[in-house]
Length: 398
Image 1 (cartoon, rainbow, N blue to C red):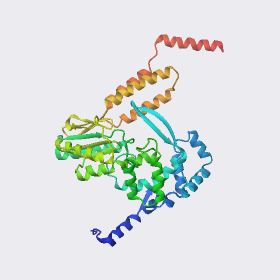
Image 2: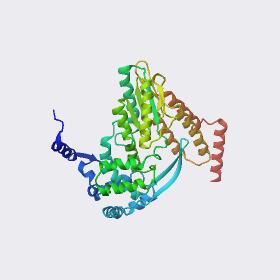
Image 3: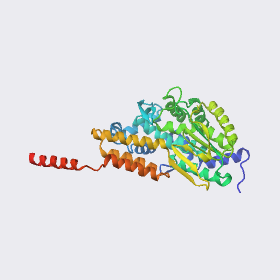
Image 4: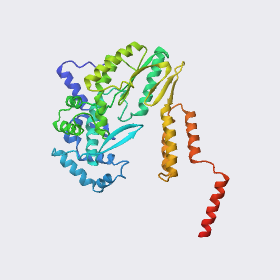
């Protein structure tokens, strides 16, 4: 068994071993120590690999196509500007969208900045910051995401059942305007504690300050990554000091499970205090404690646990109602020749694929029936005769 490092020399040995480790980034093996060196992070090879990753799936965009036309020279110009410390953000493409009734202001970055941000995040920020993230922090990172988060909820429910049965409570919390309320000072202090390279800190702070005095914008990779770190202290506080083993966070949504309702109420008060310290704001309407036997909704999924410990997951009624309304609106747009059927079919198949994750076979069949009734309606005899008449008239005219 390896001895615990004691004394300055032993700690230095452990530190040297950690820095000498090899990690894999985009299928390429690099030394962990390279993540702290500006020149090695922004090598010409890393910038070119970042460019190739950035253009995937967006070659149809005019800006990407223009950049790609003379890609070697454009990437080389980025390399020169970065080495000279003269790279500046060219600004954002700003627009508004309404997602599930919510207004979101998007600040999309240009292709040049996306390449630089991709290189910075993939070869520097993510490998360093992710080492301190808890395992149940489920967003953005490789091999994690939506499916990972809801599967971890199922895992914690099963573990809870083996120890305490079907009795217990869950605490659900949500941050209000999570990205808008992220403190720049808090993020910068986290970065300053991890990095010593002035060039790395200067460039990262430049990207952060581009969003204003407070908050991070939606639409850029660095915002997604730094948002994970914004609540990292809260994650460790819940896991290590509150001693909550059953805890999952997916960006601005959090979930805790415990056998005692009173203890979860105490946890909620502690979480509120911690959020104030970190500049985060809890959404009081969406933050509540639910009884486990009655089921709960997390990440738009209804979770139930039976008396035998089986975890049942159903798609939320709101998502079903929204999809039914959407199909009816798409039918009207199709009748007005504003959309083609192929796009409608693709949209429906996407929803059906999402619903297939859950125990929602009857819901899927009902939605399929509605889809067929809207777009594959059986024609009446009069419509058939009218269509034949129109075809005959067309042949005579020809």
